[in-house]
Amino acid sequence: MTPQQAKQLRDNPVFQAFCEGKEVEYHHASGEWKRVEQLDVHILSSFYCRIKPSAPILRPWKPEEVPVGALIRGNTAGKKNRALIVALWTNAIYLVGVSRPMRIELHEASLQWEHSLDHGKTWLPCGVLE
Image 1 (tube, rainbow, N blue to C red):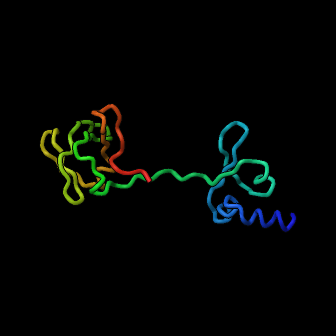
Image 2: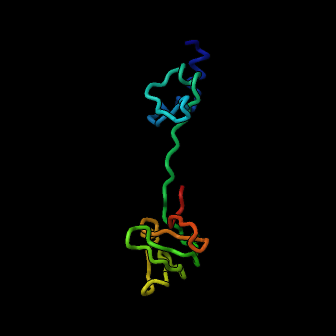
Image 3: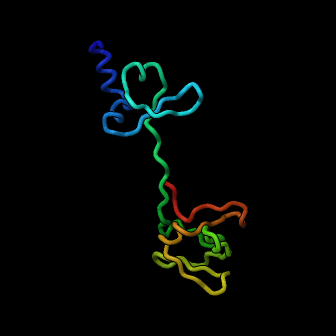
C-alpha cells in the first residue's frame, strides 16, 4: 500500500465507520446489500460500499404535531374501533366515537394506536418516524 492509498483509506467515511464498529455493506452482483465482515482496500475500490442505514425510530407526537380531527384506531387485535381525535391537552389526546370519550397519553398512542388523515384509506403510526 502506498502512502497515498493509506491517506485515501483513512479519509474514506465508510472506512471510518467500519473502524468505529458501525455496520458496512457492499452492493452484491445479486442486487442485494451484503454485510462486510473484513474491510480492505480491494473491497473499497472494487465494490460500492455504504454505511448500513439505521431503521427509523418512532417517537411520540409533540403536542403541536397532533392531527386534531384525524381518525384513530388501535393497532392490536381486538382494538380496531375507530374514533376521532377531538382535543389535545398537554401530553394527551381526547377521542370520541368509541363507547365513551377516551383520554390517551401521547406515548401510549405511539405504541398502540394508528391514525388516518384520508378517512380510513391509509393508516399511519401515531408519532413521527425519525
